Length: 355
Ligand code: MRU
Image (cartoon, rainbow, N blue to C red; front, side, top):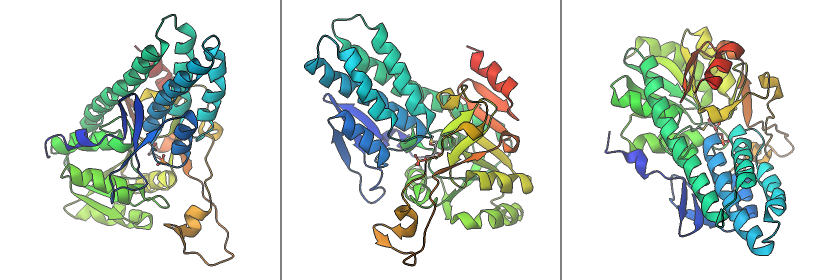
């Protein structure tokens, strides 16, 4: 692996008192940062997929609260804590599925309530930076824990992008892949291209190439064929490894649309299914995946491509951005607090309440 290439992938930067986001809509062709000056710009950037991936959305929202507080404090020095509630709502409406967004907003809200300093902006910034750094540390930990589950050198299949770009850095599913590749346990990565935003083709493939990890792209429809036929080749797929946007307390997993299909296919073919996500992605307030709000995005994303219509005029479309994989199809959930095999409410509760 090239010397820590993932370290140079920074989706979110706080610099010179400003929030800068790597515009992921332009990758891999262009590596351009945009600067966000208002909370409305931050929320719009999340909605528009400038930044995406559950942990990265949460971190961005935390910095968004700092930006909001700065503006509110200047306007209403005496009651900015009350005035900022409107901004927290704006951030909360940016995308519905990734629970890390709501987790980060709630954490910042509680922190604001507890503040008794003369420099609240500095304190809020430190809080946001801690959220950011703790996410990276959690990813490195999960990388080690997930890699331990892979016993023999093999190929793996991943979906969407759960990499450095989707997090504070290093990645969740791609964090495990990075660590396991360094340990010679992963020999090859197959990546679904992930229609309609092509997070696999544009982002995962790019991250793997940066780290010199061999990667082959697949159209989603090739997954069943590859899971079956790869077994007798030099690149047998033994694990499907994905991230998550929200995990219910019973272990049901919401992730990019197409993940559920992969889990069904993996079980049918006797291939293990690993979900890698920090505990900030676990929503203990909901009892099952049925309670997870699934984002439906514009049908234009399906009917067209790069602003060009490709579908027959008059055709309708559906564009659910996520699906829910039932816990019974999940072999392992890897968090920074530990690994839960065959997840259940009881096992997840024990892990979440362990320090
Ligand atoms: O629509 P996106 O690109 O935000 O969806 C991202 C995913 O589904 C990821 O797999 C998930 O957020 C985990 S990222 C570590």
